Length: 278
Image (cartoon, rainbow, N blue to C red; front, side, top):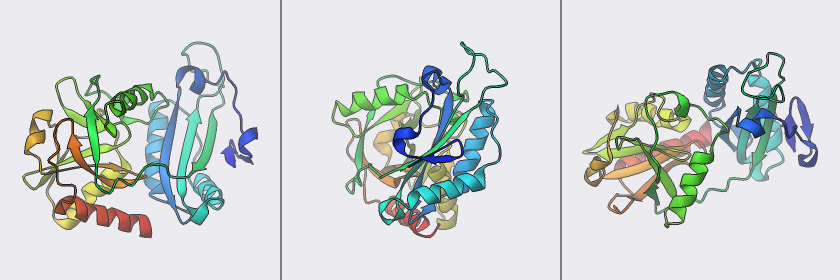
């Protein structure tokens, strides 16, 4: 079952035009969130980011937060245990050819749900450096747009080398983020993560982890760090709204990170508690 523009439809009947700008130009946004026992986890935070990105992209959408929340709950009732991964997708719809945003264009808004597919990785994952480097300092990486080929390409390349995910570097060697997650390092007992300056996605789970650091008395710094710091880090982990806190046992040729480190494990327990009680 799919919710499309206000209607619940069978998958086979939920359709948009092949001329939709989301298909032709990647002109759209999306948001992905975990659903546990029919409860959309951190829905308000996800919807706030979605609205912010819609404003950035000059999309005009009504205040549908309550309706979309209820739609996700309804879709989750068809999932085993009420668990799944919900996706909210917004496209520009059809309109004039080219890049101009026509004022009478009708957007398409879709909500779907699927089974979680990411492996649990109890022993941690291995990150490989994305072959290409990314720009920093703008705003383009701070929004979940449909233009995702760069991450698809990077993931394909590093998985061919035996890694689990790709780690993006800035042009100056800055450690940024992975294809669908934020990166954290533990260096001399302090947590380091790249600031939300437009160079990375302001992850919902990332924000939760930083808040938990305050609660647990763990020093955390949002700071630009470079790949040269990796050999001196004790722990490394990534965060996503779907998987929570995931330990990293290696980056590139480095394999020394403690995937059972105290800081990592404390945060993982807290996030799992959030999933259970949100």
